[in-house]
Amino acid sequence: MKVKTLAEIIGSDFYTGVPDSQLKPLCNYLMDTYGIDVQHHVIAANEGNCTALAAGYYLATGKIPVVYMQNSGEGNIINPVASLLNNKVYAIPMVFIIGWRGEPGVHDEPQHIYQGEITIKLLEDMDIKYFIIDKETSNEQIEATMSKFRKILASGKDVAFIIRKDALSYNGNVKYQNNNTMMREEVIRHIVGISGTDPIISTTGKASRELFEIRVANGQSHKYDFLTVGSMGHSSSIALGIAVNKPETKVWCIDGDGAVLMHMGAMAIIGANAPKNMVHIIINNESHETVGGMPTIAHKTDFVALAKACGYTYAVSADNFESLDKELNIAKNRDGLCMIEAKCSIDSRKNLGRPTTTALENKRNFMEHLK
Image (cartoon, rainbow, N blue to C red):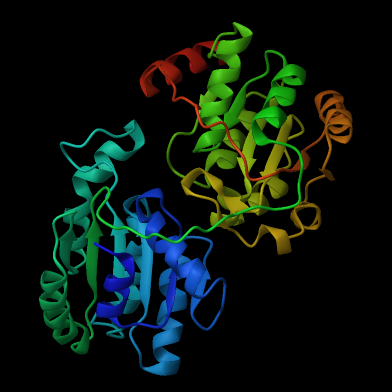
């Protein structure tokens, strides 16, 4: 169905969320209609952040907000839904729009399979009534469902629309870009060239896919890399756990701006522990490029100042390959926690593939390499 029709039937004028490729028509519609406007549309750091922000909107206006997310974000909303929104607490109503990755019977990547299986169960456990939208869903069905939902919302409970693959459409053409010149894949290629046989922990999304294909092109083993195919925002914490237990091994983390923002507290923990053998690289393209290119607030975030404030002993930013190579070499040979921000464009290859090894194979080979 047309996403504009869905929005009109829901009737809210405030949306907040974390972008998802399955919800790209909705994200593009919101960017076309509102852009980033704190009064109407906010792309937040994580799904719990969205939920709390939406709660504040409701408390201030008395109107129903909409929170959108991929189903992987359900884990991040459990706490605010159960301890804040629930009608046994503050009874704060809102509409969730959830992209259903890993739907049973629909092929998807390994990180989505189990999440897809429990998507509905989690909503039921949180006492959130839901309706599933697919390509055949009619406007009349949505109107009838929303009529029922309004009664539920009036009682202080929450509701959700679950969006199946290709269920929404939008004809608008939204282009996302920035003024940076380095491409993420080339940045990763430079990291691989300098890190040698050191272990690399890469963040979820296209960064891990690009790292995998760079190893293939180089004729190298994948044993050097741990591909964080899910759990967005946690690759740096995985790297910390490895670094403190392998103090004689240089450990590299390839992170993304959206992932860092999602769980920024990890940087404080890393800085407080300050492993001398860890290099934290934040590839900043100011966007959620893997799921469509929608902007983050990283263009307003000073990651260098943040890292230093958190206790990183060395933190720099690079916006060209000459500077990047210089800083990578310094980090390779330096005894101390390093952070390098690499400013990148919003680009990736159209023919970018996916890892051909399983997650379990990746884990076993990586652990064997660490030995």
